[in-house]
Image 1: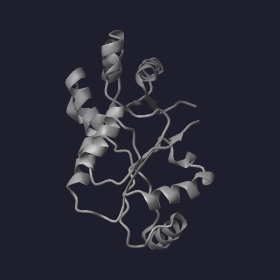
Image 2 (image 1 turned 180 degrees about the horizontal axis):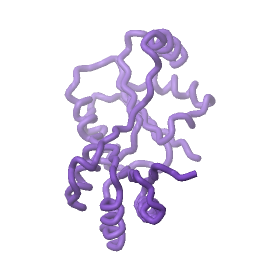
Image 3 (image 1 turned 90 degrees about the vertical axis):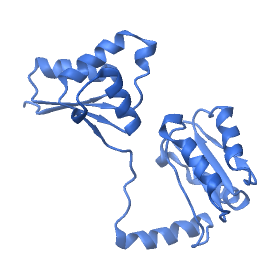
Length: 207
């Protein structure tokens, strides 16, 4: 059976994928850029690997406009070759959304009219979290401000839910992170942009 498409992501596997795809005459090769190409600054030989990957591939996907702009400025490839596919969450069908929303809010101890914002992302400045925090500071007092960040939301354990409800009830601004603790600069920014926050709670979720 002959493959019709090669899809690869990350610098090394992008290179391996398109080179092997070329050798085996695969008609369609797609590579993905999931972060800024700062690896080129750390390891100059990656620059040439990326250039080869970009040249041999037919389509390049990026997960944000910042990544697309970085690729275009560094590697000087045709803009139409780079497509942005934003990170996203699959929402339930419209008919089921209201019932699910009511059920989940009751489980979390949230009022049905409480304003809730959930952000699932990495704490990386170029992804625009500074803009989000400044927006919080510019908004009038809401009943609660809740900012949740997990690398893998499906790994949230049921055992933490009671504690989560307590934190949400006690704090106007709740900040949850899984994995490596963000820099102290981020915590300072949160307090700087949201001086009205009563408390900033941080909980670590490890593998």
